[in-house]
Length: 177
Image (cartoon, rainbow, N blue to C red):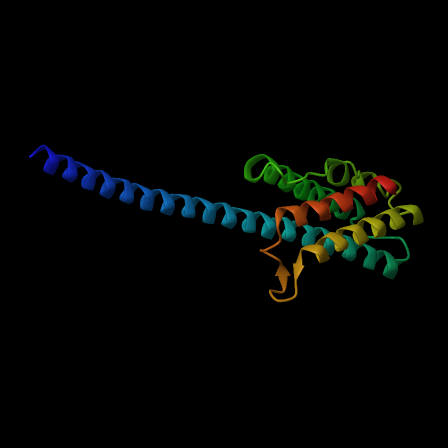
C-alpha cells in the first residue's frame, strides 16, 4: 500500500512539475516576445524622431537656398529643430533607462547643439548653414544605418549591438568635428 502511495505521489509530482515547466516556458516566451516588441517600438519611434528632424533641417536649408539667407519665422524653425533633436535624445535616454541598459546614449550629440542660438540677427550665417548641413549629414547616416530596404522604414531586426555601433559612430563623428 505504501509503495502504491509512493508511486502515485511520484506521478502527481511529475505531472505538477511538467505543468509548471510548461507554464514557466510560456511565461518566459511571452516576456521575451514583449521585450522584442518594446525594442521594435523604440526603434520605430526613434527613427520617426530622426526622420522628422531631418525633414525640418532639409526644409530650413531649402528655404535658405531659395531666399539667399532671409527665412521667414527663422527663430521658430530653429526652435523646432532643437526640440526635435532633444526629443530624439530623450527617446534614446529612455531606451537606455527603461528598455535595455545596454542601449548607448549620446547626450552631447542631441542635447548640446544649441541650434536655437543660430540666426541671432535674423539670418543664418554661412558657418551656421555649414553646421546644419553637417548635422543633417550625420542624422542621415544614422537613419540610413537603421533603414531596411525590405520594409521601407527602420529595420526591426536591428540588434542592440548594431544600433549601439551606429550611435557610437555618431558620437565619434561629433567629437572629431
